[in-house]
Length: 193
Image (tube, rainbow, N blue to C red):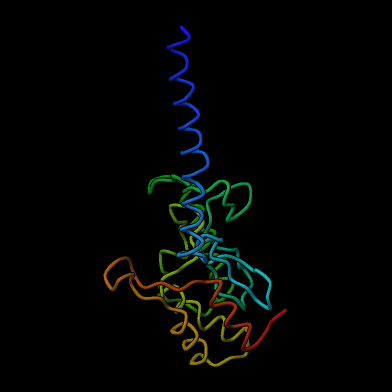
């Protein structure tokens, strides 16, 4: 019995050291050396203080800010601990109610805008944390934001263009606008409190 137990214990100790100490240390060192920004949460700073992350959305609902996608997380929006979609199908009445509520909020914020609302402004993403919207969703909100801030539409459109990222490697994904970065750019031009 002793002879059978010793190899098991030695293997247990070796695997514990390799998978519990060596591997995590190597992955952490490589992450910090090559992907430092991403490994540390892709934080966005303002005046030397973190104000958010590039990869996790935040709730904006004031008329002078661009709004992001809806968040399906609970108990509060953009809760990274409960990331996940709502799992509401297209025939689910709860999804229709959610969309109606968001449409009403968008209409209340800018009653003069009768153009079609981009779908990403009335639905949540698969993670419930999406920090980005399409350029069409940003353009839809540009007139409201410009009016609320006393800026020209051209200034706001310019900020949208500056904060629009292209496809990854030129072919993957779609063009997108990070809502937090866009709103911080707005605050640099004309802060609203």
